[in-house]
Image (cartoon, rainbow, N blue to C red; front, top):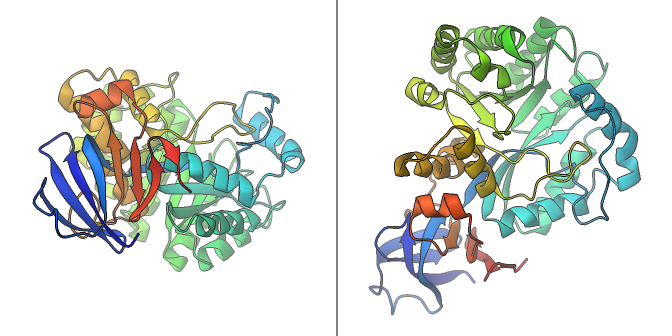
Length: 396
């Protein structure tokens, strides 16, 4: 349908309104019942709580075996061990594939995610095939999920001759960002990896999104290198650190100084809030202007059997990890999964407001903290003006 009235919904748990949706955007927001004669078609929102579509700021939609028979966990439980296991086993399970990416994106929609930044493996084995697969999957779903692609060197950069050229080609062909991976512990040349990535990013006018698992002062040392290069290249607002476990492990004074420098440089942060990690200094990060996004990471892949694509579960995990209990804090966790995630997919007009893409999630909940704590099913999901979930069931 090109135009319809989504009637009687409560944005963020507030007063009931009607949303007039036309040509994929929210055309108008008025008090409930005031536009009964405007639209030819009407969808009854039943007074449900409405949120904007969730934004998954860190995903790997190319890696999953979702929809296939169960795959048992294997390999060594280290970053290098997981990489080696994945490289040895992925062909057996047809990874990457268009069908696999479609399966993951459909689960995103089922749970209300309508936009994502996804890291897609680029290496000597698959070349840019994974990126092509993800783009085909997006097209197959009619663009219901908006996807930004990070060309991601999961198997290292400098240690695999030819990967830099693939990253450069991916950037030239439309990848929004290029990735990096533990410049110290994987490539064992943090200066070399970062210099090479920043050269491509500056020349191709793309962002940088670096997975950093290294702990303690080794991680902090790499943050400093990233800060220096971001400022020197004038790339503030385009550089992101994913995971960054070391930040929460630093002594208080060192951590505060680091957060201030990250904010001044315009570097953002994405986390999947794993239960065994140190809490992030999120209050200090918010005060310093360090944007934080939430993501699901991998979903049922050769790294881990966990994950179902529900970003709301990740938001709840963030809240539990950081001991959030007050209503405003619980609401902040939902904002991380929605409003504050918009910058990670370059959404300037986002939300339940006129002119924004019509991405709406309806839930049976009293208020926003109730949404977080219970994580109820998504009763209705509208993505780009299309109803993609009704009564919890996928329509695409």
